Amino acid sequence: MIKHIALALTLAVAPLSSFAAQFVEGKHFTQIAEKASAQPKLTEFFSFYCHNCYNMEKQYLGDIKANLNKQVTFDSKHVDFMNSDIGTEVMRSLAVMQELDAGDKMTHAMFAAIQGDEGAHGHNHDHDHGAHEEPEINNRDDIKKVFADNGFDISKYDAIADSKAVNDKIDLWRVQQRQFQVQSVPAFVVNDKYAVNMSSIRTLGELIDLINYLAVERK
Image (cartoon, rainbow, N blue to C red; front, top):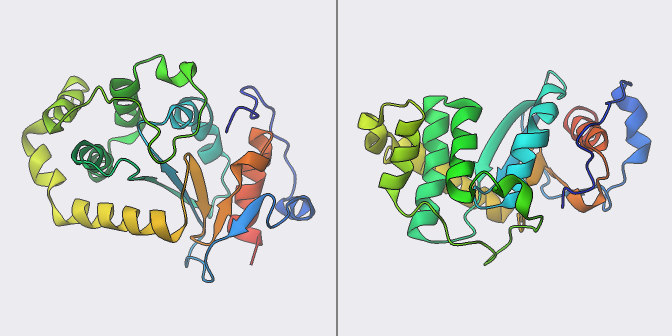
C-alpha cells in the first residue's frame, strides 16, 4: 500500500490553499461522516501485526507528524481484526502505552517483539481480516516482559491495563473501526470525517499535503 512513497523526499513548501485543486473526493479521500470533530485532528488506525504499519512507523510517521499544520493533533488507535484474546491484549498494550505516555520507544519495541526486526522490511501486503502471521507475543506476561525490557516498572501494569480508562479506549477504537469502515491498515482518518485513500497516494509530500488540506481547509 505504501510502496509508492519515496523514503527520501524533499517536501515542497507552499500555501495549503494551493493544494485544494489537486485533491478529488472519491479519488484521494472519502467522506465517511457528516459531522467533523470540533478540532482538527489526524487519527492513524494500525496493527502491531501489520508489516506496512511497521514500515509506516519507522520510515514515514515521524515526518508526517512533524509536518502537520500546528492546529492538527495526532492520535493512534489499534484495530481489532483478530477478534481474539491475544489480539485484545495487544490492543490493550497500546492503550497502556498511551496512559504511561511511553512514546515511540514502546511502540517500536512492540512492533519488533511481534514481527522481529526484519518485519519492517520483509513484506508489503495489507493487513486485512484474517491476514496475519502467528504472533510471537502469546499472552499478557509476554507483553509485560517487553515493557520491562525497555525500562518500565510493570508492577502496576495490570491495574492500568484493566482500568476503566483503558477499557473505554478499547471500546471506542472498536466502535470507530466500524464507524469509519476501516478495512485495512495503516489507515488515516482526518477530523473524524474524511478517510485518506492510500492507494491514490504517490509521495510522502502528497500525503502530508492532503492531510493538512482535509484537516484545516476542507469544510
